[in-house]
Image (cartoon, rainbow, N blue to C red; front, side, top):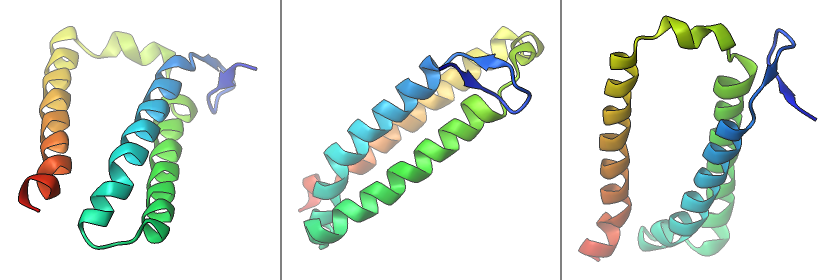
Length: 106
């Protein structure tokens, strides 16, 4: 069953599946250990990770499926998309450093 946006047009499901799958892997790989390093038990860490994952999956669905406009790709110049890619890389590096911080300190 193909995913459809709010206008009923078919939407490619690959970006949504990739973002949701990667967020699942990162959250459940780092989340419980990270929260345990901050003093929470696994019994509290897993529900917190689940809520965070559901929030990210819902946001990804909203942004990549529900409000997606196929004609919007022609409206964004290539330089802007390339600049956004560099910002995303910097944010990802900062996120990984933030995730490793409790293990470096403690």
